[in-house]
Length: 377
Figure 1 (cartoon, rainbow, N blue to C red):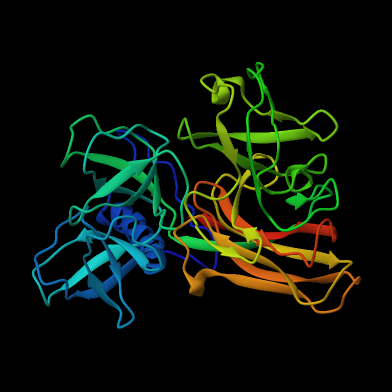
Figure 2: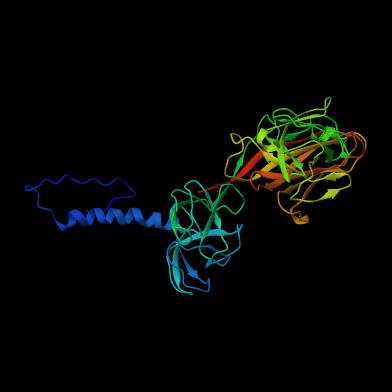
């Protein structure tokens, strides 16, 4: 009989050696069923597209499908914003080829890869590079290792989809512990640091209240040491004793008395009025998924002294006006609330800036989680 799939499930009789005559139909019928199963799977996971990359491509080559539905190659480091595809059955330029953007595939690597590393486009055409952190251009996760160096291969699970997930949490992404002025803090270390504590001296710019976080946040603010060219994450601040507690003792093991410390971002450099972009790092993997490439937040801002103050968000990259979003409190002494467009995450980090009409006039300020966008199979 021919297959009855998908309307029903096929059934076959058990054959007994030296009793039953095995006929051609006995193998033809299961073959018919296999074809019925393979056809929709092929249509769901495989794509026949034209190769207009300018070169011959072969199985395992990495590229993308452009807006015209054609296969292209690229050597942009960490390329983002394209529809990834891996060649299954290749061909010459201008020929039709078979590609996929789902499931387990074999990909060519530009160096050794450890199972579990995340994969991105490299500067070597048709090859991927491994990293241990998430950024927007993620395309796959390695399921097997490559120990063959450049040109070797690994099996990878493609993560070409971007899935929005609505969520909320009782803990803020960021919230203030004290009323403060604009987003800035510059000071010096006063005395030898403890295992996880740093005592600061006079505040040269900004104000100490700004670095005082509320309890149970989903992020930590970065505190930079410009003399050591490194940073620590602020866990809490005691304003009475000028003491900052950091998350890890190793981060401040080489810090010394009189070192300059500040919270101004060293990656996204921007100041507006007395406010500077500062870095926030997501520290709670149980709430924000490890494969999150962006977060959707709501914001709140209240300035008791004037109107028009702003809360600015920006990705953890070099400042670009096109990447910035400004949220304003248009009425003095009134809490302004609203939703911020998705903020791209680089290594689970983003930046923000706030201005203030005067000293200590920001009486309420928060960022609350509303959703995430994750890299998905």
